[in-house]
Length: 540
Image (cartoon, rainbow, N blue to C red; front, side, top):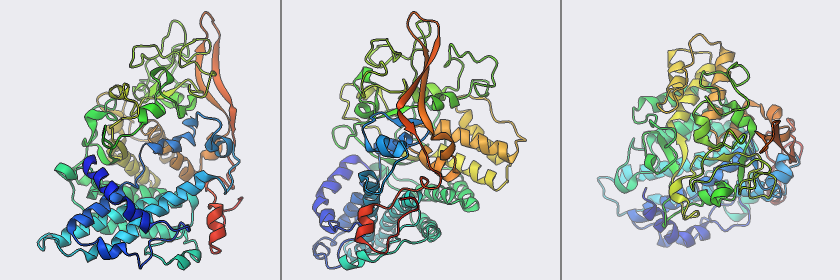
């Protein structure tokens, strides 16, 4: 959908959604007696504008916050709630961060429920297309509702399953629904709507939710639920649509040239001057006047294989004094790589300046100077585009929420967990590894289930880094307790004029992860106080 239409709809409906959702209790949806229902639902245009407004609830560039809470990134501002409480392993149910996640999800669910209960009031639609149009619009709303229920379960576990608007008093008496029942609901919703959504859109409708998006979201939800067969089937259904393919250039995939490309299944739409994001200002290196919200870790940099397809500790030709030479090209496409020594310079920034964050470099990116410079020496490169450098808060690149490479990896993972490792699994993984500007050695056949499991998990780490998915992977794999401990390690380097290799270790955040508590967030304390039926998660 064109952002001009998108923002126009959102602005036109601002008062509508405010009136429909201003209850103190976040579980309450719009009152059944809301007067807006008597004046708004008159035309087909009303229905389209209303569902467009719900699209605004989908997340965008803020998705990188999840990588801050994983092993591949850290919160660069050590005074934030994320760093002071969550990363350090001291979360509490009163943190605004938890309350905001709950609120944002239920606000979107509330809007979808209200839309679904009112859209059938529309009477002026073309009788030849009315049924299909309303089914499509309902499918879009149901998709967004399922998206947020998937997120709620991953963050909080059992959550109230609300599928209709509630009176104010009803919101104080809603218990948590077992997560398996929520997964059942998400599964059925995404299955039911897929056939009502088109495979493609044209013109102003490009960017709307498609059949492929519904099936891909089902694959993701079922993967998160550990329902391997359902995940594999849904991912295969996306593949069999023959609508999507990998974009030829990984390096350009996150820039303007690849918007609405064959790899993009669902994105959050932005547009310069109309509906911009501040991605460049928020995430670019200080040397280009960015403010560095997330600092990628040395653990991520080290995870990229050498060009032979070997880990750096197993390749005898890996040179720790030239650490980024002959590596998986995705490393240099994902991160701005720092100088290692006077003889091994780092990347050139878009303004022509060297990227040299070494202590004592006296550059704008020097570590350990202030909170605006990466604390690890690494910076994200995905979505940091040179076209945005002159107007850093006016970025128009769409943020991809689901792409085809993720679908291929979901298919490979589900089939691996089913121990059905056939040629299609290798084809899925190797298509990603052999993308034209990646060209990594293909994974040879004959891997065991455990070997293939580690291969797929590795590919998810390096292919999808800085896209907001790693946090959820660590929690569903139950591996966060192993990798989210201790001080955060950054780049290795040799000081100017020196000879000794040193490593940036940021001790301001010493991470701790309690496996008996931290795989779920606490239910926000305010919600527990308002609703006596809401029990708290263990350890809070």
